[in-house]
Image 1 (cartoon, rainbow, N blue to C red):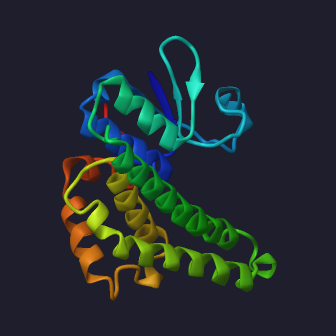
Image 2: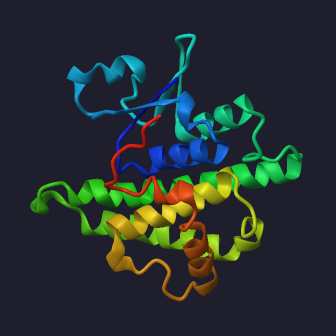
Length: 204
């Protein structure tokens, strides 16, 4: 299998962390790509031009990160998505919450990349407020994931790490002591350490 990614993408990092937690890194080739560059041929892999995307051994491709995570977990009968129905839906909802926070933070990131005279302060404030509400919810939902490693807790950890990487000035963990303590513990996991932004890709 071949995983197309960008080294600093939080969406791709979620999948990379899951791969390590499942112990299948040796089965997947990591391919760093620029999804905005049509010359790479990536648009033939994912016509939406978004990463991550996973090309399977028999030729088809799946995306995006929640689908890839669930596919890989099912592939090896892993424990990253509970078999109990009620817990499974809670994990999926937590993933949706984390991805929604990331989407808001990414919208700010993209707006900040526009020429200064074209940026909308109102839009930036709206997206940051959405992300802050989402992180407040993560603090409240902490009992849902504080002692488990699953697709939900992986998403939460990668979301918080990216927010602090790209929008550190927002002090995301200030006043959220329980969430900060949980994140510090989770961030020490081997899967998080080897996938930190800026590090070379792990070799399969």
